[in-house]
Image (cartoon, rainbow over all chains, first blue to last red; front, side):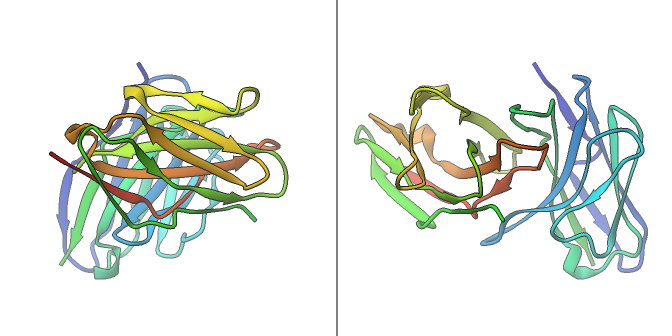
Length: 112
Length: 114
């Protein structure tokens, strides 16, 4: 089975802190994605990556950056956390083409 | 641009009755269509997908979905609902060509009442 893991299930940070969310997949997938999920808004794509060292902006990249130095790992970085970044963050990976995306368990981030 | 609409925020159904969760899509080109389920405080789990071929797709936990090209719909169905089916359901779409990410609907909360 594909496994996507995220470094933390729950995280509490203060406004202005730099926050790192880590995601690791174990199935050699080319594609990796970061979404945030908010009630009534569904899933919104922040960034995605088709290969190592490649990144593409999604629908809501402002305030975020990403890093993909190794194929299995995709990091989401909040350069200076703000309260409006309090959300559930979901990482996903896929083989590409017609493949479905596999999701991690999510990180619920609270910024105070 | 691709988009997905799930017209119902909430669907309530009695246990044992059939359930339908609606999804319509808009893409320029042929679609790949997906259904996911999310249980409380969990990530999304893949249920089923339509790529090509038979319009009726069967997936996990007894769910199925019917692709209707003329109505641009991909409704999720189950003949007999269980209380354990209560969860948040997401429909998603991607065009055939290229390697674009999935676009998700806003989700439909299904409540199955005993």
